[in-house]
Length: 116
Image (cartoon, rainbow, N blue to C red; front, side):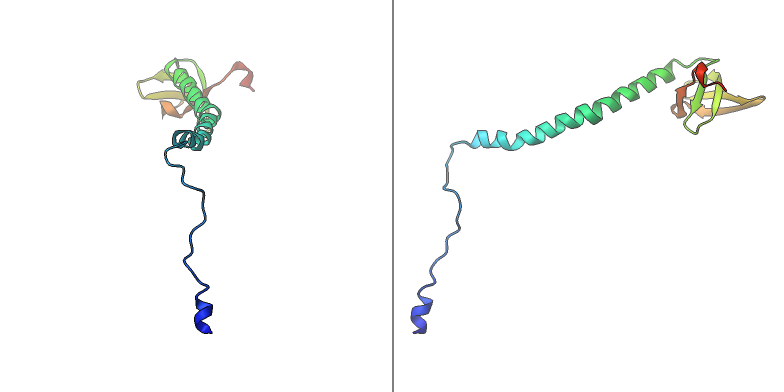
């Protein structure tokens, strides 16, 4: 009796789609890569491109600094440019007080409207 119960168990085969051979291989590859390409395009236009544009504008501002420009540093100090070197800039922040900064630490030019 136990021998007949064990005869019920036979080889099990995995269920899956029928093999397609070489048909549709390229179209399946394109279909699987399309979402990744679309995600990269969205990231490029929403994140990478605006950041590159802002960095380019900041670099142009740093290259065009001259004596007498009113600036704001990355630390929040307001001052007037006294001299500009290749990598450094000297800023007057008060009477008889001059501070030397690295050029990348100049955050923005100050407009006349910022005066208090």
